[in-house]
Image 1 (tube, one colour):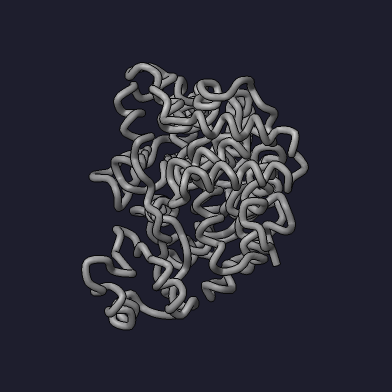
Image 2 (spheres, rainbow, N blue to C red):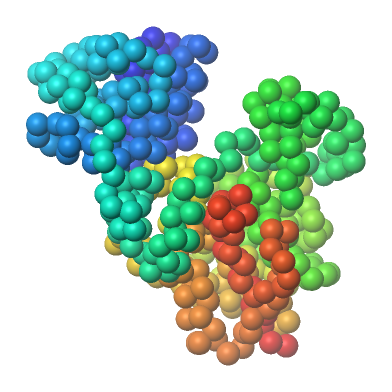
Length: 427
């Protein structure tokens, strides 16, 4: 059992900043070995530092005598967050971080940490209207702010980055177990729970608080983001009689399982890694939905699938910028050079998958990013080389009217950033 919550947060932050660990996975592992009363503190401080990381780098330049090495910078940033956002007296925040230096073998830096924290005050931000202002105020790398502004303009990007993401867990009804009507009746008390209900309807499911998650029958619902559910509804819009569907990059399985549940189609769900295929199978089992999960590299052509499927889904690996509001570690695990590599991978997956679509069938491409070079630009490039495909019209519960491409943005739709495009293979 972990007994020192500050050491726990320090070790978690080092895993993200030094080892490129996934924040949610690292946190869940750590919390499983922590006292219940420490978990809220650890979670808030850990994610708080991640979200304010660039701002605190900026503050360190203002209030520290020199640029510290990464382990010391992490301790200073923890102290800054304690001073700004936690109900900890200033003297206690400073003393705790000075003490932490000794606990993690950095006692030689205790004087530096003490000075940097005692001098801290909210620094004056860079000038409004600059990329530097966006980066420091909202915690997005400068290179990414530049790309986003080039795509959408400064005001749009500022409003998008300023949007506070939904903190509650999004769920959908597990229709294999319970109907929408019976679910609403069974959990009516949660839905009508005063001014702060534990269960609030969204356009495609419900937002649930911890109170609901801890009380409800876990078999009655499936945790799945609103954007993910909306994507599946777009895949299947105006597409009756789907018999065979293929999800080329399916893990952990949410979209493949929901596609099978809604359409009744036989769905083949693939991933390149065996352990991730097992995640798909577990997801399908939980939802009581039958699909076929296989190990298959989406970039490697499978001749047995040529011209076979009514629907082929390419929910490709991407930068994940659309979910950075709730997963801030994404911003530190990606660099500008990664975007071009991802785009090349996305093109290859789409190219390979296009051969599996039968004549008259639909090819869908989706990402959880908002960068145009990973979204619309990929589709334009593909269609310029594949005249056997044409744009196909789809619709989302979050948009009005049909379009061949759907963009969801956090500040406009209160969802993750998401992109879906559809193309039909000419008969």
